[in-house]
Image (cartoon, rainbow, N blue to C red; front, side):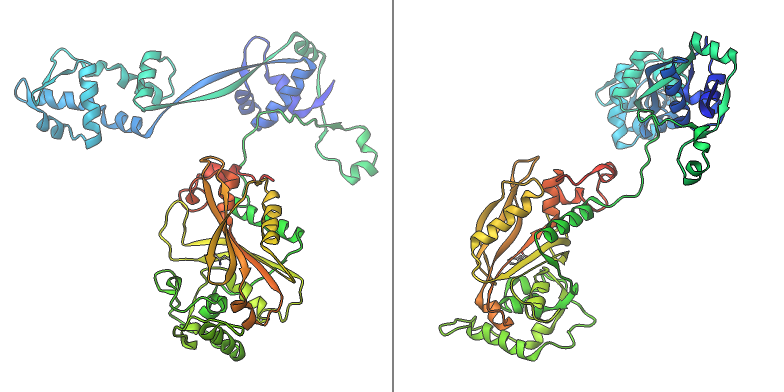
Length: 500
Ligand code: PHE
């Protein structure tokens, strides 16, 4: 009979009387474990072998266990130090320092010292029990055995070591293979390795050779090593999905500088120059170069006038100082609304004809205090719609549509204030783990004081949503630092999926 090569070698290696694990057969036949497992399952299906699965417990020393193996258990060290003293009893502080115990080890030493009847501790003095024999300490003996992989262990001692945190138990499924009677018969009748083909090629089809070859069968249930391949970071994956959704809703992507003049970041947004967000406390200013090369003069004039006097007949400005010098200062953008300002002003890609929809998913930078919901840089999902007669309902409807694409249907809105929008709304979403409503974005309809200087005659509704907050809602992460940075769990990064 012809069988694929791996199956032939498994049949020839297996025995009818003695169980052999997949691991052992793999080592003997110099094949990968997954190949052997696949072949063994195929043979089992034909009835040529039996596979018995059992869970085996493997025990390993923890770092603490390793340390004690090398340096001795704290209670044994305490005992030995006390025995070395000249008198029957010794001051506890002296015994501890003679034993060289660290602060954490002292409590461990004392608790186990008494339990194992190594002696008594009373009135600040240690009295070692002369009868005790640390050489015969069963826990030390077990640590030594575990270290060399011996398995004749007493279960109470193992439980004790486990509760002391000196070992870890790892459960493993072990599969053992034996030949069946049928397997023995086929072997005796003689088996031959067939050329086994794992992939169909054009040559194979054209040459008619496919008629003679044996096709390898895939066993998708076979145990295999888990491969951790490179993959896209969850936050990037969510950003990509956000872009797809927005493109699907008819938006175009905008782009622009990370470092920009305050003019584009703040002044064009009718943010007064003495606004607290414009102080060095909140922003990352540039030292070299300190200022932007040029700004469009006409626009600077119109923006200045809006700040000083407002717009329209009964306009009202801030009546506070305004200088072009201040507006020219460079900083890392504190929001990506600077991109919206540049685009609406016609500065970035020329005049934009309404109706138009634009978005970006880009970084913004703020000198915040690091905590569970704030990092110094984060991604904003910026967006705006330019059209005639927009209302708050259009804005809310857009968000409902957007978040619904991620399975989020319970967005709540709260009235808010921005110098550049009226009305303004903050957005909140319910955190799936804590049930708390967390802020996920800010939005509004741009004011005439912002739009008129930019030369926009229609309405513009706009927003900045936090990508990381969306990611928290989607993954259940409770801390932004669970999503990226050094504290992030590697298993989470390996397995997290964007679900929608
Ligand atoms: N710039 C605002 C922020 O960073 C977001 C926003 C953009 C609000 C556009 C309204 C309009 O919070």
